[in-house]
Image 1 (cartoon, rainbow over the protein chains, first blue to last red):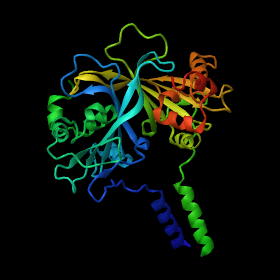
Image 2 (image 1 turned 90 degrees about the horizontal axis):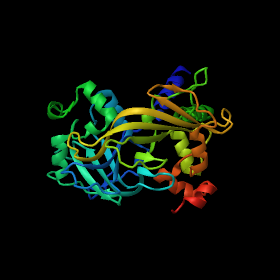
Image 3 (image 1 turned 180 degrees about the horizontal axis):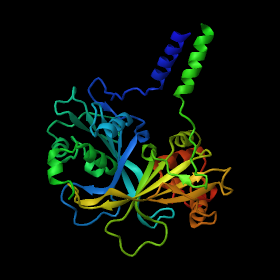
Image 4 (image 1 turned 120 degrees about the vertical axis):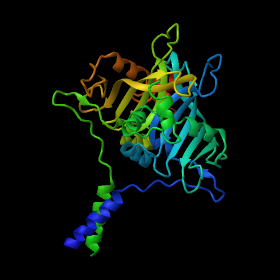
Length: 191
Length: 191
């Protein structure tokens, strides 16, 4: 009975563990958009964020961008301040409205415009992180390694290639764990 | 061996099930803010939303509000378009910034200003839903049953007392399941 009890404990522990996240690709190398990304961990939402020169006028209905990350990578980041291999970020871009129902000012979110992703996969991508634009579809080839996505993220991101400077709960953790990129810590932090 | 195998399956199933969500109260009847609400399901984020008359000028740094709901209630809503008893919404209000790091336009999220909550508990509250303001603290008495929160939510919400009209993924579900409040369906839907 004792060995049976140990077996029971081992099997139950195994069944309760969540499987490690594994991004899915088509045979042609396209990343499949995970259907359940809205159930993932929310990192932040911005409205009308502009990395290039600011527009001279503010649009009436700027776009929201919601950022999600797969839960197991989020838990690893809470522990270490770093992203494990196979970390997948989803950027969901939505239209906004100002007046609607009882809302008279500011903006709320409406329909999806497009979806993008960033994936860390050190075996698949020599540049470690790759970027994907799904549009309204469900699969995408990675952007070329020399794309503007790669260039901007590798140059300006606060932790590895990720814009943790815009994820307030994670910026605190990376700062405490000492995992900010040296270039970010020197130039941006505290400004 | 057969009965042992059945027992094993039953125990493993039990261990893999998530416990039902149970809001926690102090002996004085204050709701405790769940520490892990950022790991819950994200419903939407708005910026500078205004339910009263619109301000004559837009503030430079309006506030974001992020809405989270406990995962088991979210899954029930996906199935039924209704909220089970003990559904807890968290509204996290954050400051915004415009210029920072590489961002030159629009707004991104920074520190928490305050946290609020809405709880459905039909045994505890005669009005079924109650509203809580935590500020920066971790516990709160419910607002009085005749508070402006209760009045506005019960009058204007799209599903029960909840502003599903501002949660785009859930609005689709409630519309399909036919669970929109009649007053909302008559006055607001499609406008």
